[in-house]
Image 1 (cartoon, rainbow, N blue to C red):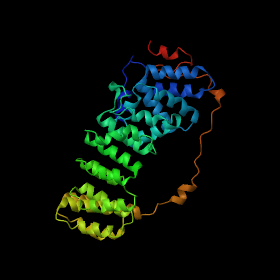
Image 2 (tube, rainbow, N blue to C red):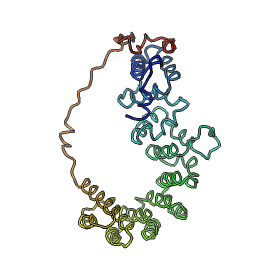
Image 3 (cartoon, helix red, strand yellow):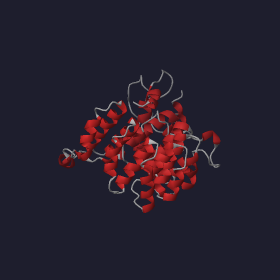
Image 4 (tube, helix red, strand yellow):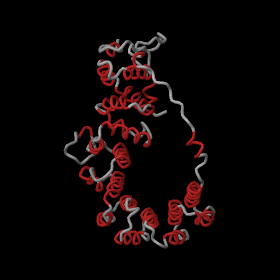
Length: 358
């Protein structure tokens, strides 16, 4: 259970509706949304009066339902919440995977949402300084955009963050911009940075590029003094199909520096060739715990790559029985009877939500 869910699910007597009550209100409102004109106003007031509870339950509903009508209704209400971006990018509120799924869902309702989120980051004059995302929220925002926003449309909004004073932000920005730039000149410029994470991420963003200029940069960086930079360059050479990348990885695993040997083990795992297994097994006996850990993870990754997907044919043949649809006519009257000790939803009208405070 997320921290946000824990915080909002504990209610004291007389404090208003709990999560279960809000869930029921949302479900009842959505059941007649588009049929009863009062439903939209009801949900809007619910979101306004109980933003924390509404956010939690609206997100839960979106994650478990695929009704496009409900998606549009809830997405619009969530996006208009004043604290929406802060909640979305709060790392303690939900996992990155969950945040990405939610953002993709909301993008369908608002295709400009990625631009709006990007403008919540620092360094742009069109953002209210009091609402700028900083530190962990800003880093999470870039992670979300990295997985959801395609093409160069955000260059003008995020490009400046590669020189941010926050090393974590600048490194994430370098990965975001680099993956959409594919420009050896830009990458070479980033390699002049004093931030090794920026340099390493600029090379990671280069994975898949096989031009002469790209290969030259990758070959030079394999011998870089920073292990992260060297490892990303080595993987980049393999991805580009450069002959000899595997031999370089084996050679690096015999380096005197344990950090270099750990980097070699990590690179072997990323490359994923079973021919590395013998050397990785030897590294399990390395004197350095970091090397042993890296070798163990690399072996596990190679094994997972080799292992065929089990029961894939059987899984494809499983028929999922869908729940029967409930006719709208059967839920127009949204009054329900529940235990009087709990917060009970009332029949849907414009003032129902206001009565919850009484």
